[in-house]
Image 1 (cartoon, rainbow, N blue to C red):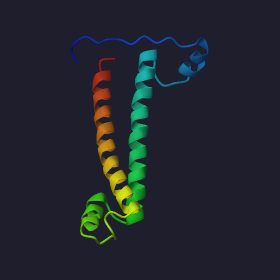
Image 2 (cartoon, rainbow, N blue to C red; image 1 turned 45 degrees about the vertical axis):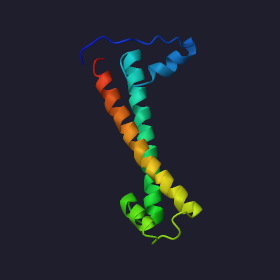
Image 3 (cartoon, rainbow, N blue to C red; image 1 turned 120 degrees about the vertical axis):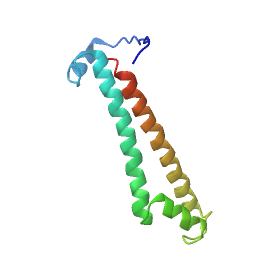
Length: 113
């Protein structure tokens, strides 16, 4: 990756050093990069877990759920629980895409390290 990078300076209390020493990475920069990538992956896993819970609850993937919901096959489309689940499911799809993009970007940016 070309171009110049702007660094971030952090001051941590000395008591944090043993924790940093136990983390993966040879340098503080690599340790922070590893933590960042792991946190994004954790957020992706959380989205996937919640999405899977909805798939199990309704016994289908979102596309089928949405089609059946719009056709009135699951009950009243604007019933509170159905509407809330539909909105959350849709949000999870968007959130997953957001975190995938963040992961791709972070990996790309951190390659210069």
